[in-house]
Image (cartoon, rainbow, N blue to C red; front, side, top):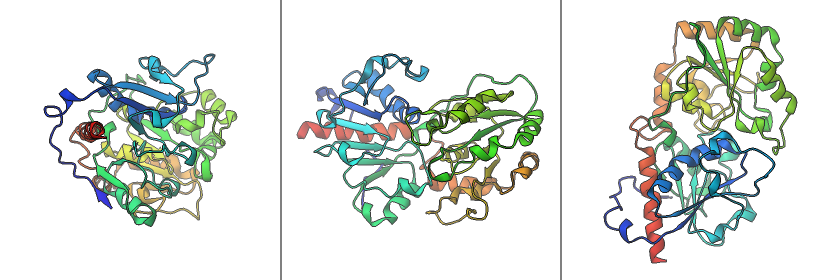
Length: 364
């Protein structure tokens, strides 16, 4: 295990003035991976403003016939399909490199795109990364539990999305409470989206009583993904009253919401920032249950009530909005999961680490 201290002297005075321009790749793999872009954006914004280095948004292809997401509107000029990662001085990526994508030399920094409990996130070899920027101790413990990653180089920086999170423009103009439903994607059968959509009575009851935002995992909209189902997307768009959002960063929507409904979605860890009620819709009742084991897929389920019968969901929502019983455990798990979660300095710590690595390239 190689942990790098988060307490770093600034490199700006000593090294940055003399640093030659470097080529920095922000490797998305696909334009459809908006959640990847949201994780890279704080670093890209900094180094664009900094203007010393050359920045490249790297994807396998850009379809000239398709419109890029609005989230890319100020960054279109940075796209390139040069996916030779060896051609860059430093590669920042929130995706997990596949065998054919591994560069010949050690120049890749892992910028994790979330704080997932899904086991396949941790069953990977991170020893070949130059550095892994981890959100907090839970993530580190998950990685180091696997002997495969005992030699990974890591540092805890916190979670950049928590640095002064924005609030979305007003969505509803009424006095109802606002729910946000965030189903994960359908890989591994752990999404609740089919269960949710197949219960029209529940939807009707919920929409009469509450405002409803639906913010699915971005892959639910991604036609390139194996488990994409156009029928699900169409149904979400057609339900009257649902405000459907496709974006990489859910924090502005969370700021407008009173209660979270999820399943195995890693977005639940981002909801912890606000410490408001949450409910978990169980996609596999009788098999999945809450667990205090930090390695469990359902570790987060300690933070709210678990709904094993969707017919009871509306009543659970009512109850939790009246009486939130899980505030203390949510705050405990937040602080285990995110280093200094509300100090607004995670991006700064990550940038310091990246600048040190860029400076070290002067010696190579």
